[in-house]
Length: 360
Image 1: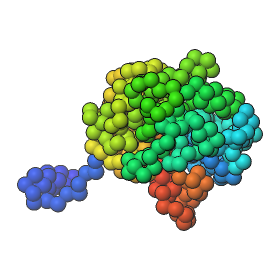
Image 2: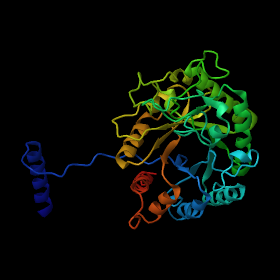
Image 3: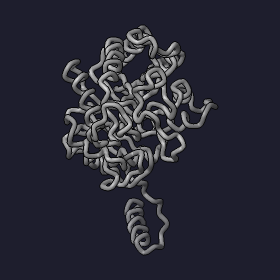
Image 4: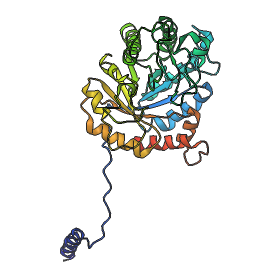
């Protein structure tokens, strides 16, 4: 009798709900489904000081690997104790022994370790050590620092002397990291060679960008047998896909998407909450494998995750979280978020990683 009464009452409540007369708890929107077992569960860190390595290793062992991390991109750039070009070495950067220690930990934990070296643009708002040491490689030679649209300076990828130096540094990282993959950066390139730049012969931004990417591909893939990764923002036409000027290109580089090899893995980063992220499908339609990347907002991360899930055409590799903060602060935040009282961004990044990893 009680079962029958409960059934009748439930039916009445359902009818009243349709009529607006019965209060019901709103059903939460479904989140993204879990990633496949073989998906890439990644993290990008910027490790500029070897003093942060011990706590980062602790974070890998105690939090990150247990939460499913299986891919770690370590952006090194000039923060390494290079020996081939000691004038470009960092005293506080990692050395080969540090990387070997990190590599051993990652292998034990089942994590693929990937070096990144930021190429072409994004060489600092003012020249970094490379362009301070070799100012003749600046492109353009005298950027207008008063221009409100000025952004990070670039080196000149048309000058063959640049790659002669940079590839020596690549070699040292390859020897230390023993990688399968190599990330060349190339995001947010805003300044390009012009008529004031040596070796410039009227090339368009797309042609210059593609030449740089193809040079790195020739060296890393064809000569060294690695798989190349790069950020995807300069390959997205802002007129076609309406992201902001950092997440997409308004400076003529987008046609390069059809000028570079399709075996490059595109890391498609988006950090703001949007209803959809059509570049994920766009890159797959162009023939690339895609690795979407998020940052410091759990809601934006889940929106990107869901969009990637909807657009998967069989070439979506997984999901990546980026940090863009001091790696020591991030490690402390992820290890004990409740007690962490440092800068706010690492705490938000740690929270985002936790939320994303709950869906892994």
